[in-house]
Image 1 (cartoon, rainbow, N blue to C red):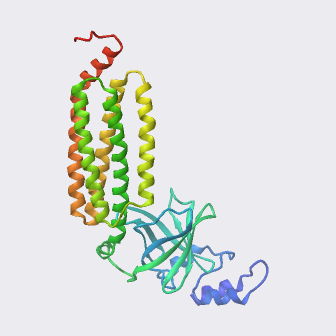
Image 2 (image 1 turned 90 degrees about the horizontal axis):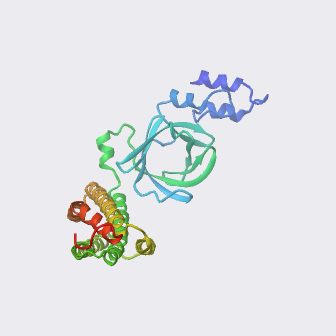
Image 3 (image 1 turned 90 degrees about the vertical axis):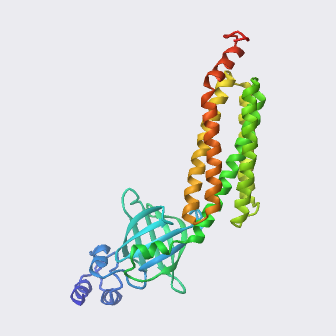
Length: 329
């Protein structure tokens, strides 16, 4: 290592020798990016990034355009690392010395993204997220686990369960807003369906949807969320969307069959939402939300099946409204 440092010291930088260059190389802190040695060589020659960067870190948003970083972790071993959202998604990166700190350069297809970090107070790191060299956000890293050779099972046990519960509460709010939209869509379907048996089917599902909303509100409170401004905004957006669609339902041609088609698609959107809610609740260890998601999903699957059983009826209704079938058929 000292031979390598001496070689760097002897090599002029922009035609000048600088004592600080020698000091930086001899200390093993890193080679200045303006020298002819690539930063990667330092990461390969050492056992891992110095200055305590190895370990498992919780990432917190500090500013800029970064989204809320609930459950985001960075795991760093040697010159390699990974950014994860809980145990769901991971993006690999390499660690390179850069300036007074380090750069986390993501692998393709995300190689345009780089996180630069420098040491912060109390065993923390502060960083900037760059896209094509331009900063678009800032973050902090706080240590969760610092053992250099931790096993995967140990890392999994350190997943931020509280972060998962916050994410679960966010998703409960999202599904509640979705059901608010569905409730208003059902009002429009009831208003625009002249067949009384089909109207009865929609009214029955409207009552189911109200019960689903009640269960979701209870889970939201249990997860520590009262009616907040963000939740209210989601519900208001759902109401506005449903009202616009309701006007379109009145004016559209082929109302019966197109409304039935839209209802069928909506039911499967709800089924998917409850599938994801159930799985997220399982990872967060919330058995009651798992039960609620399964119960509501079963109701949505049953409603989708009822719509599917009545395609001919919806088509006949459309044809009658346009005088293409006699009213008595």
